[in-house]
Length: 96
Image 1 (tube, rainbow, N blue to C red):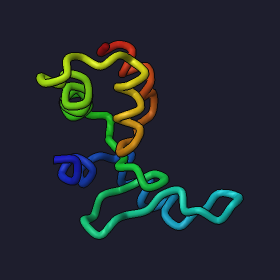
Image 2 (cartoon, helix red, strand yellow; image 1 turned 45 degrees about the horizontal axis):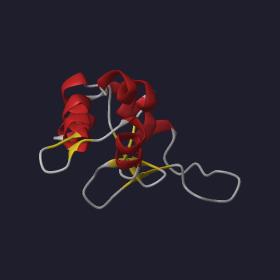
Image 3 (cartoon, rainbow, N blue to C red; image 1 turned 180 degrees about the horizontal axis):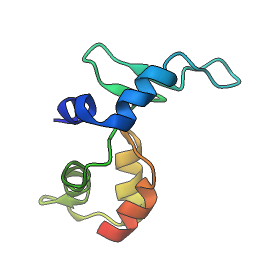
């Protein structure tokens, strides 16, 4: 699902065009495309500005039926391990 959204998302296309190959001061690549074609920022999957997609990621990382609802910090930590998008913290606070 993320792959399909990235393929039609204009900011994703611009990042691929202008940002791939750029590195930080330590030489680490900022933006990459993995073997599955997913755009990544610092090894985390980039999630385009698609509210349904972001809400699904928030739901999966916050609304665990076996352990209950995680708080803001735990939810943010779980999402930050694998995903990146601008204002991720604000979206987590709003959701939780």
